[in-house]
Image (tube, rainbow, N blue to C red):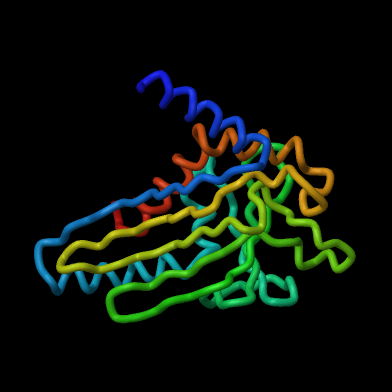
Length: 202
């Protein structure tokens, strides 16, 4: 049975590399505070950190830079991400830029989140190619939540499949495969764990 399970896992990984299957990933951090008042105050700061996307660039010299743009692809120097906005993600090293579009936001008393999906470069009006190493069906949700005196921050990745098939991959098929596989093995964990720790003030 164990041998069969290993074989199936290897086959699944092979299909992912070929762009035929997807993965779901989730990274979380929690911080429990001594009382409700301090937790509520800290939650307000968590919301501020979550929505100041440009500030994520200061996490570490080893993590990505994040630059928020409006619906037309123009730089946004302030304000929260809104549906239709774009986020430019610049990975360390000689890597191509990656772009996502904000597709959903949720705000209530105990939870704030926004969701993005891979997109084209909004500044390039001549191309509809998805400028991201994941295909357009992937989703990432960034969330902070207060439950009792505990704040939880999460990055929730869904349907993460490599953008290396068909017209949407353009001429990025090979580099997308390299980036995505490297991300799943190491970089993604570093990036999102640093972010979720930052959002809960660890």
